[in-house]
Amino acid sequence: MRKDWQTLELCDRFFDAIEQKDYEILEKCYAPEAIIWHSHDCLYQSRADNLAMLKRGMETLPKTRFKDRRVRVFEGGFVQQHTIHVTRADGFVGHMEVCFVGYVRDGMISRAYEYFDTGQIKKFVGPRS
Amino acid sequence: MNEYEIRELCEAFFDAYENRRVDVLDRLYADDCIIWHNVYGRETTRDENLARYHEGYAGQRRRTYNDRIVNTFDDGFVIQYTLNGVMHTGHRGALWICIVAHCRDGQITRIDEYMDSSKFPAWMGPPRRDVGGDASEG
Image (cartoon, rainbow over all chains, first blue to last red; front, side, top):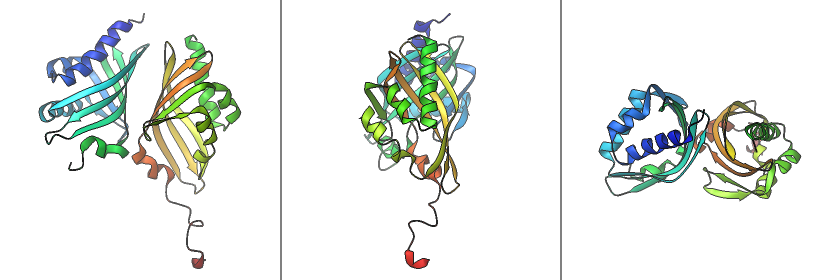
C-alpha cells in the first residue's frame, strides 16, 4: 500500500537536512545499501562517498537552498524537481536546475538518480572556481 | 487517467518519437502543452516543438529510446531513459535523460526535460569528412 505522506516526509527531511547542515538526520535518510547515480558521469556513487561529498558541502558552503521544490510521489519512490542555490565563501550564489529521482525502501532512500546540466556549470560554481 | 492509461500514453509518446511519427505526437500533445528544457532554460509550445522535430534529427540516422524506467503519479509520469543514436557518419552516441510529464484526458500537458549538454559533442561525434571542408581540398 502506498503511503505517500511518508515518502513526502522523507523527501522533505532529506533536502531540509542538507539545507540545515544536519548530517545526523541526512545520514539516516539513506538505506545502508544506498547508491547515487549522477548524470554527469553516469556512475553510481557509494553511500559513503556521497555522504562525504555532502558533508564537505555542509562544511564549506555558507548556504545551500533547494528552491521551487516540486515533488511527485510514485509507487516506491518520488521525483523532486528543484533549483539548488549555493552561496559560496566568496559570496557568489550559484544555481542549477536539478531533477532528483529517489527510490525508497523501508522509509529510506535506497537508490537515487540526479540529473543536471554540467554544460551550465559556471552558473553553479562561479567564474573563479 | 489511471496508471495503465498514463503508462500507455508514455509508451505511445516515446514510440512515436522513435518512429518519427509526428502525426502521432501531434495527437498526444495537448493544445496547451508546454515543453521546458533544462539545457535552454526556457519553455516552448507544442507547435514550436513539433516544427523543430525534423531539425532535431539533423545529422542522425536513427534514434532509439532505451532502458525506459517509467513511474507514474496521480497526474503524470517520470521516465528515465537512454537515448541511443546512430549518426550519418556511423558514430554511435548516447544521452541519459529524465523527463517529468503531466497528463490530462489522454494527452500530455507539460514536459520538463533534464539532460547534460556537456555530452552533446560525444553524442554527435566528429563531423563527416565529406561535408563542411574546403572544396579545394578535393
